[in-house]
Amino acid sequence: MRQVGIWMYQNGGGDVIEKKLVKKLYDRGIDTITGLNLRDATAKNQGIYINNLKLNDLDLFFSYNAGEQTVYQMYLYETLNKAIPMINSYDSFSITEDKFKTSFLLSQNGVASSEFYLCHRDEKEKIKDIFNKWGKMVFKPVDGWGGVGMVLIDSADKFDLILPFLNQSDFRFFYVEKFLDYDGSDYRVDVVDGEIIGCYGRQARDGDWRTNITSGGSVIKRELNDDIAKVALDAVRITGLEIAGVDIIYDRSREEYIVLEVNGIPAFATPEQEKFGLDFNDKKIDKIVELIDKKTLNK
Ligand SMILES: Nc1ncnc2c1ncn2[C@@H]1O[C@H](COP(=O)(O)OP(=O)(O)O)[C@@H](O)[C@H]1O
Ligand SMILES: [Mg+2]
Image (tube, rainbow, N blue to C red; front, side, top):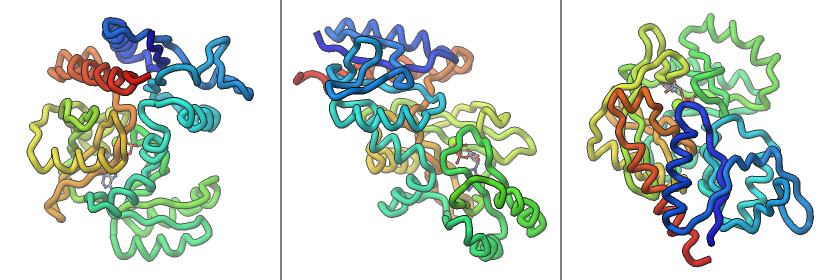
């Protein structure tokens, strides 16, 4: 029997989703072992182990836990993926964990993304020049999430104010983006295996410029259109993610949809969000099961 390892988030209804996945995989002749946190793994010449389970003997590893990926977990993720298929692949996942790498890759491949600037921490004056040119910008940790750690810089005073903090920080480099002219709402397009599964959006809380739920944003219903679908699928193809959630914003000055970021572990709708009307969880589960089946078939 084929055997697939799973590390899946358990909060927000993740445990229920995991049970459905396990059942549907079993119905296709695929055995699963859940709760495999690479944090608990050790490695020797023969393989990478959690207890007595040799991970590199699995047919596939499904990693779907957005909790912080430590350096150790990423290190083993990378190594394990040299031996067996993983969803998402290490290469794609590690790119999309980084906002700079993602925006760079997308813009190099003709996908509209935010305007960014990156420089070494000792070259801060250059950011001042960029700020003078843009007038309004966002400082972002390249590996942040949930809107945490981002600072909106919308005046010269504010710029001078945060400089001492940046000097004290342990950032080796600084990443900034031009502030987008948008209406405070975004689109999230869920994609599995190159197919769009669902589309919804988020609306920033009054007075906040971030749409993240963790920053007080709320989920809204959204209609997909051809332009959004195209930019989402292009972004997914270029990053190579097999499961993705693409965050898109309509830039009013550029009059186009731009990809803000691509998420390699897009959460399923929570039970509350399902009640609200986000109804694509089952479709997403089916598509993931199909994908895992397909990828492990010739083993
Ligand atoms: N360049 C920008 N201009 C305007 N708003 C932005 C910009 N970048 C991010 N935001 C807002 O902040 C939110 C969080 O930014 P994002 O890059 O998606 O980081 P996170 O990983 O923390 O979600 C976005 O959903 C958007 O609402
Ligand atoms: Mg985001």
